[in-house]
Every structure is written in structure tokens, then in C-alpha cells.
Length: 211
Length: 207
Image 1 (cartoon, rainbow over the protein chains, first blue to last red):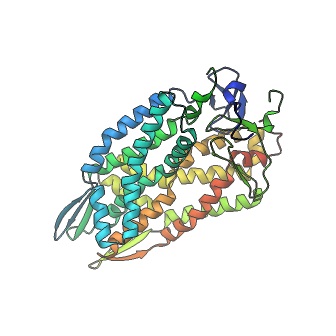
Image 2: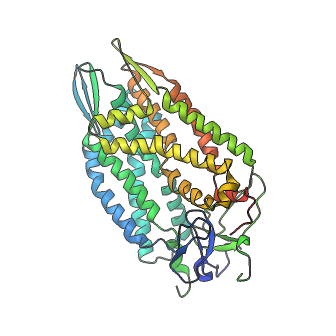
Image 3: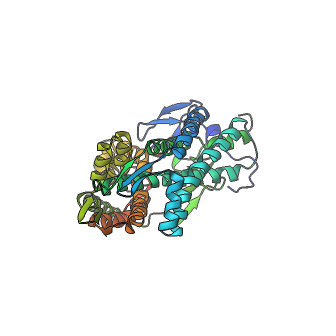
């Protein structure tokens, strides 16, 4: 089967659905969902209410994005004074004290990736909702990138966790987690759930005849 | 296409394309001809080798959890933390939900991931006969994306760089085990593909 084939056969037309749990191909005819013969999970022809679920997760993530970046994720108390760090100021501190490649990495994981996820998934949902028939391959690639890089935003949460666990020197120096950390973690989890509830098949569905 | 056997069909989970399944040689990988999604990789290891990697991962997971990750000394005070210890400290700090998320992604998910693959590989045929294999593969595929040892490892490195100019930092055996666990988990993820696992059973292919 080559890419130029004018009328590609699709699982839905053939009454076939692939099980998300164990990748078994199941004959479910024109049912929307059925039980998988191999892992007894539910096989869906399409993820039910995929666009609604994805948008809901995205809206929640977008709302929490503000406190995640404005509120401090980390509070440092030393003999020299107290300091609050947000996600962005943490990157700046790392740039001044650590190495720039590491600062770039953290900037990418904590600032670029969450924004990329919010914008890309919104774009994908919007285009799927209006049944756009262009840029299928580019959208499929974009979704793969979002799926792949999504988990790396957890980086800052782990940094805060370790600093809180290590810097417990009483009056000399101590670090505690700020309110921004919870919001940031929620953004990461919500955008991951958004990516998982998006059905990439909806990118290709509008090309199907009499769908 | 209608009369074809299901085992001869490739159905892309990402774009719903139906195509002819191709037999892959060891080390070969294929992509969906329409959307380019990864469509699988040919067997390159035996079931025994995969089991050995899973057993290695289990031991490294144990070492990673038992030994301290990092030790920090400042003004005569020493502090060290283990993986679970870090979550517990965070919970004691009043951030229980955050601590639970950290524990889930660094301790529980990797543990379940390794245990499922270990038990699947060591008693593949018994599980397949009992009809449990499919269920375990499903659990694995639900959980693996929440296992974030690789991201955590990078987080450790960033923390060390942040602390290095303030205090003396000694990398503990837990972090070395964590570093060694990364490739083991990467191999494990590659081996735990459903078509490999089901391909290793004696059972005739259901689909």
C-alpha cells in the first residue's frame, strides 16, 4: 500500500478496531465499542467524546498555567535571607550559577514543553473539530512530538522534591515547596491526560468518503 | 481485503489505515505507510534474554530504592535522601498530593512495570492459558507512560548542579543504580511490545 493510493482502506470501513490495551485487531462491525477478545478490555472504534475530553483537560491546564508560572515553586531560607523562586527565575539562577546547557535544558522542559503542549493540542483539537482536510501528515507528526516530550516537564517537580529533601539544615539553610509547584504538577498531568484522550485518528477521519 | 486473515492485517492505531502486515526481520522496524507512526520492530532478542534484562531491572530498582541518592554536607551537617525518603519529606512539608505524584512516577509505576514484565516473561504460557496475559499487557501499557525514571535522573543532575556551589555533594549508590536502570528500562519497553509477548507464547495467534 503506497502513500499515493487514492482510497486507503480504513479499519472503520472494514468493521475492524484495534485494542488500545493489547493491540489486538478485533472485528466489531459497526459497533462503537466492544469487548476485546484477547485482553477483555474495551475496544473503541474511536475514543468516545475524545475532543470534548481533550478540550476540558486543556482548559483546566490553561487556567492552572498562570499560577504555575507566577507563584513560587520553591522557598529558600538561609542565614542570609529568604528567597522565592518561580519556574522562570529557577532557570535564570541556573544560568548564572550552573552551566548554560543545563539551563537551556530546564528552560526547554519547563517553559517550552508545557506551552508547546497547550498550543499544539488546542490546534489539533480545533482542526479536528472543524474536520479540516489539510496538513494531515504534519498534524500526525505534531501529535507524536507532543506525546513524546510531554513527560519531560516533570523535571522541575523532581528538582524541587530533591532540594526539599536535601536542604534541611535548620536555621542555616532550608528549602520548602511553594504553592506554584502543585499548580505546575497539575499542568503537567492535565496536559498528559489531554494528549492521551486526543484520538489521532480524528486527524484522518475527514478524508474518509461518506463518513 | 475482506477475506484476509486478521493476522495478515496491519491496522494503524494512530490513523486507522488497513494495510498488509509485513514480517519483520530481527532489528528491522516499520512505519505506517500513511501517517508514519511506529508500526513495530522485529524480534532481536530471545525470550530468555528479555527475562534477564527484566531481572536486572528488578535488582537495580531495589538498589535505587534502598541506598541514598545524594549526600550533602554543609557546615558539618550531613543530609542524605533516598527515593522514597524524598517523597516522605515532601509529604511532611504539607505537599501530600505532590509527594504522591512523585512516588507514583518514580517508585510505584516503575515497580509495577518491572513486575508485570518479569511475571509475563517468566510464566508466559501459564498466563496465556489462564487468559491473564492480555490483561497484564493492558496494565503494562496503561502504566508505562507514568513511569518517569529517566526524567527523575535528569532532575537529580539538575539538583546536584544547583547545590554544588553551596555544599559538598556526594553521589550515592542509589543514583548510580538509577543511571544503570535507565537502559534496562528502555530495553524492557522495547521487549514488552504486545506482538513480541504474544509471539513468544505457544498459543495460536488469536489476532
